[in-house]
Picture 1 (cartoon, rainbow, N blue to C red):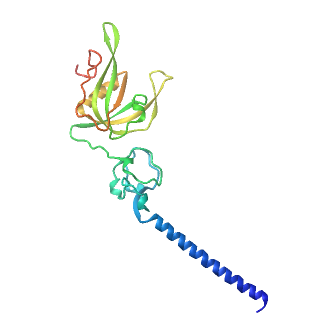
Picture 2 (cartoon, rainbow, N blue to C red):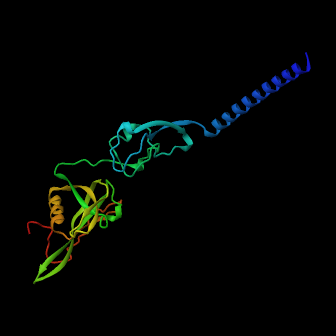
Picture 3 (cartoon, helix red, strand yellow):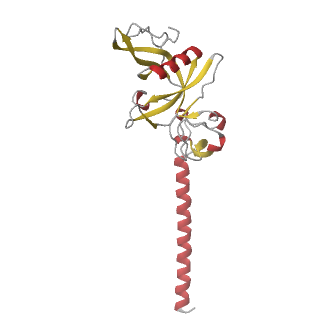
Length: 236
């Protein structure tokens, strides 16, 4: 065997030893990662971006595997747990499905009505209203008393259920150059309260929402109108 052949054999041996070393290193690294990650579990993930207040169906979801140690108790694992609910905010693709992202769609009971109203963005609790929340609805009127206008404010509806909240949009005001930012909000109300809201939208100077705390109220406090007349009652 000449010197050139010996060098070739030596290089082949070194290459083989290097390959064995790399293989052992990779196997050791993979084993350490598996030991660190631990057991895996399946959770739900959004397969595409979803806009706020969109009803969820199975086509928007997929299952993925993550380490158990990274999973939280609020992550959903079954598409049936999310199907039919609404998202409460915009959701990015690949986001994990969490209970806090979703809200149940309210169901009408006998005697209830769905009614939509355009609420001024400034008087709609600064965009904080979400489906499933409860609000009080107030209206401000101008009443005629002894040949002069007098402001009159009152609560027209207590504990109204918000079903849907639309997207912010522009609407022309009373003046040609006036543009208001409004949000369409759908409420679940009794027939009587639906009539009160319709009346207020037609004749009130302003309709304003007031959020009720998550704990709710056992009894709505009595609030009389800050005026003598009661413009919210069409029969009056």
